Length: 325
Image (tube, rainbow, N blue to C red; front, side):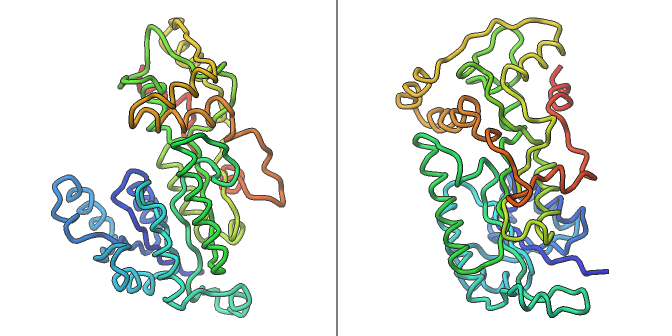
């Protein structure tokens, strides 16, 4: 049996990061978390970090702005997964530099020389993406800048010859479904609903712990090496109209629908205050343009998670919405 790869997670106390940490320990990987010392005593994070330690996570003190601590952490592991937030995306160049300096990146040729089924040396870097494919999406500002940064990080990884997997997880169910993307709402609507565009474009919604499990499974899978993993479970590829219909059936009521044409939405994005303009600029390519699902995943192209890992019983949008009834 091959030994489980050692995984370092950077940004593991953040929104998607905590799910990645939990999935890594659940699968049985020796899991390391790069964390600032002050986070351990932060009342908002202390309980989470304590739960990580209870699951066997090894804390490594440091951050991406402390090169020596970052370098020490990377030298201890086989795989690095970054889940840093939007403000730190561009700073992932520091992780790339540290991976190269660590000097344990293993080439494909060296991998083939292994005869004991044990991986030696650095195996993979998974940068923080967890959304739509940065090389495909056509977004307006301010979202466009975020996708450009993600694409730039991809090019930097490739230029350095670092093994990678890019995770295109599409929409976090926990961000988009609890209020059906209604402004200032905390629960799904029961009277009226605002629909962007005509509501017919297909988007993809995935529960966060499913995203995490697919990510961990892909992290050391040779089939995902130097590829994009698209998380596109077939039951979760739905138009907004279809999601509204699901919700209406659950509550036994028809909602009053208001549609926002694309040109009007683009005007609203330009005029809306932060953070609503930011949110809407992500909704536009996802809900109006359908850019998460308007292309085929070819056999020789990137790969689709639910096909690679049928053993993961993902939560459907239908099942997810049921908790709000």
